[in-house]
Amino acid sequence: MYQLFVSPKAHGAGVAAALISDAEARLAARGVELAWLACAVGNARAARFYEKSGWRNAGTFVMMSETSNGPFPVDQWRFEKRLTRSP
Image 1 (cartoon, rainbow, N blue to C red):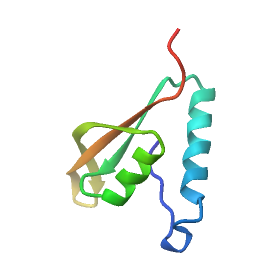
Image 2 (spheres, one colour):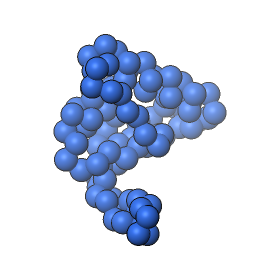
Image 3 (cartoon, rainbow, N blue to C red):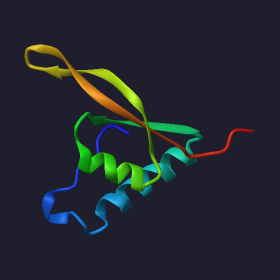
């Protein structure tokens, strides 16, 4: 999953839960067993949402984000969730 953004007006309306549930179902249908997503370190609101949705914080990594001045390192939390069972 690349990004999940819900405008402040839609906070608390179940929009984010519906979006992530749909994404999980689509990934599982494609055979993805272990999904992961990046969350900016310090984004506590998003981290709480992912944990509440069954995702596990698996640690940190550095993502190189593209900017007009070239790549820029950004610390990220890696969240993971098992979507399908291994055989």
